[in-house]
Amino acid sequence: MYTFKKEERLCNKRLLDKLFHGGSSFLCYPFRVSWIAAPQPQIYPVQVVFAVAKKRYRRAVDRNLIKRRTRETYRLHKDALLYGPLLQNNKQILLSINYIGKEINDFAFMDKRMVKLMVQLCQQADVAAI
Image 1 (tube, rainbow, N blue to C red):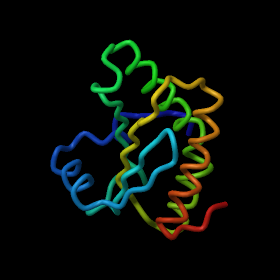
Image 2 (tube, rainbow, N blue to C red):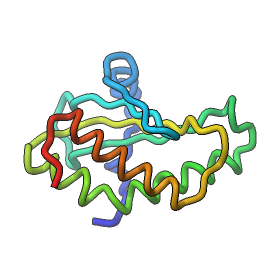
Image 3 (tube, rainbow, N blue to C red):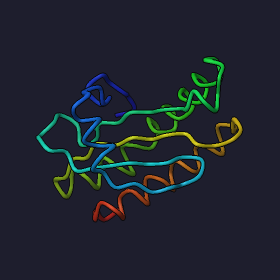
């Protein structure tokens, strides 16, 4: 399951509004995470959206680089750290990962923080991690 398909991306405006207005959030620098339990059943246990502020990173090249690195770290760790525990407890969530760092970090740093983020997310969603 090292794929990242269209069905795993959060694109629905109504669900995005619900996520940002009624969801829980926490900070795991350089990421800010917002999440909410999914209101209706879906194919995958998590639907996710990645965002980088245009105000902080004016150049699209920089924003795309950060989003690419973030998506890749998510894709590599989602199965073991997020999907497994959520499927065991029969839970589904909507997730937003915003990059709030002041500088563009290397892949290794982002990878380490993404693992920490997923463990913290499982704890907040009351799901026992493996």
